[in-house]
Structures are given as structure tokens and as C-alpha cells.
Image 1 (cartoon, rainbow, N blue to C red):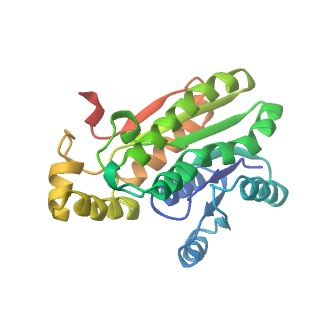
Image 2 (tube, rainbow, N blue to C red):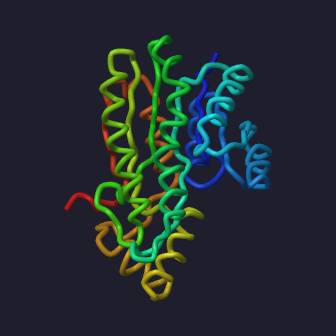
Image 3 (cartoon, rainbow, N blue to C red):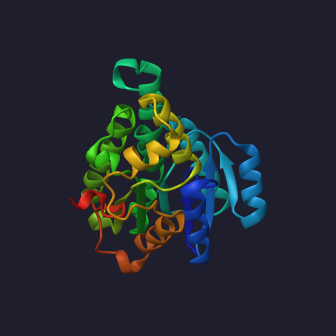
Length: 252
């Protein structure tokens, strides 16, 4: 019987690529989504991957949803915490609601999803937790104090939990993408253009890729391939790592 992998935000963008890559690698994959019913329906029709709707910001919904998946599909061996949102604004204009929404989804969501699967992984002596952080959690980004804080928190969560899970056969790692051309990044381009008062082209050239040696966006397939490796037995000794996929951005 194949291992079950759960990908949050797994029907679009990076999450969809990770879901497909894990499926191709032989996992039984299930995905969650928060709001876009049509996209989730299309994704399931295309891939056969079952989708479940709930917000990772809601602990009770996460616990209930995970129990349903484990009852219907099987125990979760791989959890990819991918779901994320942005609410960009320069800090002096950022509202408490913009701060709270991003922290609730991008940071607290990791606790809400990981906590209900942790005891089962400990009991079975196997688990793979993969947290999709960001290089902006490592270096920060103007106009994204909320997002950068949440993604930096994801890294602290990853490193602490890796130490707790090591003797139980559980690895916990973070993937830190640079800019990957997804609907979320397309939205970030629009948001940053408004924040800085410049064109979309100028955002890509002068903001997003200005310090990236490769001068190219990473692809969703590159993220998916890394997630498959980190899920495998070959990666058993890799835990507590924060792996950049950023075209050399954080190398200098």
C-alpha cells in the first residue's frame, strides 16, 4: 500500500506541482484548498487527486479534516505545509487585519496542520514534514513585514520540530523558494507595483529579480522534485534544513 501524502494549498501553483510530483513518485496524494471550488474540481478531474476544503487557519477544521482523510484514505506519512497568502503593504499602512490574516495562515497554519498528525507519525516511527517557507523569511522584503515574519517563523518551527522528531524517524525540513512564477507571485507583482508606484515590468526587473544571479524565476516543477526527494528514504538524514531554491539569491 502506498504512503499517503497531504499537501495543503495543493490544487494550485506550487502546491499543485508538489501534489503531481508526489503522485508520480507513487504516493497516494490528497490536497486541501481554501476557496476556489472550480480550480479544485478541475484539478481533481485532471489528476484524480482528491481535494478537501478547509482553512488551515482554523485548528478545529484541520483536526476534523485530517481525521476524515485518515479514516477515508489512510494514515498521513507525508505532510507538505504549502498553503499561503499575501496581504502586502508598507508597514505604516499595514492594518492589523492584514497582519493577522497572514500570520494565521502562513505561520499558525503550520501548527494547526502538523499538530494533529504528529502523534501518529511518532507512533509509526516515520514521518515527513515539509514546510514551504520563502527566502523572504531569511532576508526580509519591504512591503511584506507580515509575510516575512511568518515565513521566518516557519523556519524556527522547522528547526525546533526537527529536533523533537529525529529519534522517532520524523524529518522536518523547509523549502525556501525565491520567486516562482505562480498565481501568488503574479499577485505579488501587482501588489508590489502598487506599493512602490512602479510598473509590473519594473517590479520584476528592479525588485523581484534584481539581486538574483540567475535572472530567472524558479519553476514549480523544481519545487516539486525537491519535495519528492525530501519525502523519500534517501533523505532520512536531512532534517532541520532550510533549502533555498532561489537562483543563488541568498548565496551572497
